[in-house]
Image (cartoon, rainbow, N blue to C red; front, top):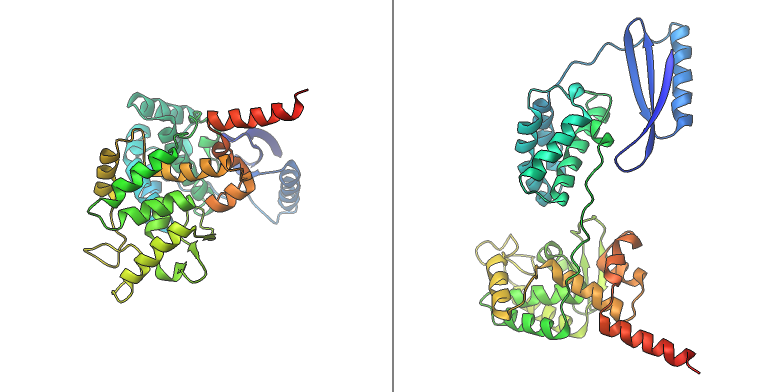
Length: 349
């Protein structure tokens, strides 16, 4: 009565699907191990033979439009504001391409591959295509686990495009000074401090902007980032120049009706917006191919060139896996030359 088959997900993981059919009706479950699949199949077969269980009636059909409507109402509000906002922009094109009226159980890997082709035809990068697939896959996962609207996730059968390597651009010491000088001369009084902390601590823009007075200890010389991408807090010691700068900003904010270190001048309960000031500083510095995230990569790269271990860099930048930090271990040509020369000195006769 039960059949077990296996297939690989888009991430290369093997899963096992159990199908039990009786009197024209079917029940399906997916397991991560064959042992779990076999155990459940035998258990259900025994219950059926004993007359203690029956194949459930076919689930009511739901469309992709219904699924996304519920997903945006119930699931997106649980996510970080930036993630929720960006994913909402992806929904209309997915619905238009696959069809809002298409039933979830009728969506096939072929239709999803056509979605990928349509995204590529519009000039979207592999990273954007992967984000669309990730959203659609999570929608199916929720529909399976929480809503019980469907039994399988067709996105897992689609090979995702390979994303290009991350940015390797980092600033030289001379470029750092040019950029910080331009930030210091900006009419935005917070830009210099924000940029300095990003370079000194390898922090993301959102992490710096969301710093509050309770996250900063000028006496003990550290900051604690709580609102991080992976939701793990991390405490980092402040280098001398960064400490003095933070002390200045703390003094400026004390007494104001806000607990933010970098509050907006128009609404003290929200972080300041530095977009215009940042773009102006980049133009004034004359730096090319630089985004704010380049400052984080600059910190990681210079840590690597200073001899920091991958574990040290991962701890400072807040990466959970050493694989995530390997991109920061690349070294400049000059540093590699110095290392090779030292090595040759030791082995030369």
